[in-house]
Length: 95
Picture (tube, rainbow, N blue to C red):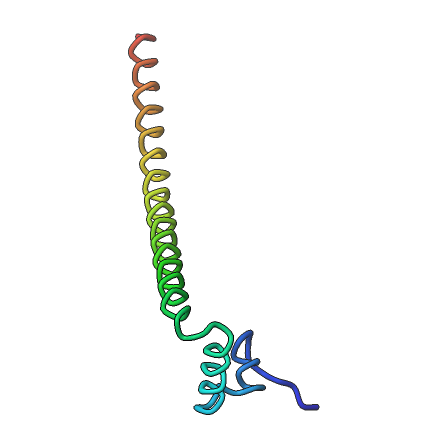
């Protein structure tokens, strides 16, 4: 039977294809008609600000995750060092 192969978006794009030049022009004209020429710069600024904030937050999350992994490793090393020093102290008090 005719199965659509691919995963996620690849399957959808294979089914519908990418929009051509005329489709993009029609969409742009529809946006111009809906919002008007005066509102487009405001919309573009708002979209740019939103994307900038989104990217900044994603970058912050990535650094938090990377630093969190480093902190976990440091915490484990600190705990191991503390355990070995505690064991050494116990051995010295026993003597």
